Image (cartoon, rainbow, N blue to C red; front, side):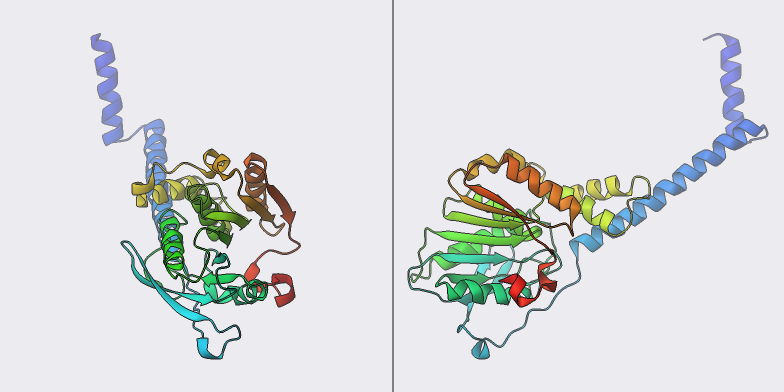
Length: 299
C-alpha cells in the first residue's frame, strides 16, 4: 500500500478516536444512534417474544356435575409436558369424536356452546387446553409442540373403547386451526377439519402478533420478533409451512373459515384453501373472535 494511503487511513482512524472534523463527528453520532437503536429494538422484540410465548391466560374452570350433557373429566398424558385433563362430552356409543382446539389467548371454556351443539348431533366431543392455556402449564409455541398435544389427546380418546377410534374430526381457530391442519396432514384418523383463520407457520403468526401489538411501524421489530421466536423454538426449525404439507389432506373433508375481522389471517386462509385438495370449502364468517360471539352465532 502506498505511504500516502497509509497516512490517510491512520488519519481517519485518529479522527474516529479523537474526532475534531465535522464529518468524523457525524459518523460517530450516526454509529452511536444505530447502535443504541439496535439495542432498543432488540430489547423490545425480546419482550414481545416473551409475551407471545407467555400469553394472558383465560381460565376454564367448570363444575362438570351440573353442566348439561354429562361431561366427564378425561385425564391424559402429553410426552414431555406431563398430565393434562380434557372435558369429554359423550355422544352415541362408537360414534366419531370431534376435538375442539382453542385459539391463541383462549381456552376450552369458551367452546362449551359449540361442544353442546355437536353433542346434540350424537358426536363425542373433547375439549382441551394447550400449553399456556387455562390450567395447563408451559409456554405457547404457536403450534410447534401443540401438534403433539393434540395427538396425545386423540390417542387417549382412541383408548377409551367406547368411541370410533379411527374417525376423528378437529375444529380450531388460529392456533387451534394450525394444529388441526398439521395433525390432519399426518394422521389418517382425522377425517374432517374445520379451520378458522389458520396460519401457514408459527413464525409467521409471531410476526402477525407483533403487528397486532402496534409495532409494525417501528423498523426491524417484526423481523427481529420472527427471528427471536425462531431461535426460541430452534428444535422445530425443520418444520415446513402448511402449504408444503397440505396436499396430504386428499380425501379429508376440509372447511376453511375466514373473517374480515382478521384481514391478515383471512388472506392466509384463502391461500391455504386454494392450495388444498378436494373435498374442501371456504366460508366467510360475518364476525370473527369466536369467544365474543353470541351463542346462536357459535352454533
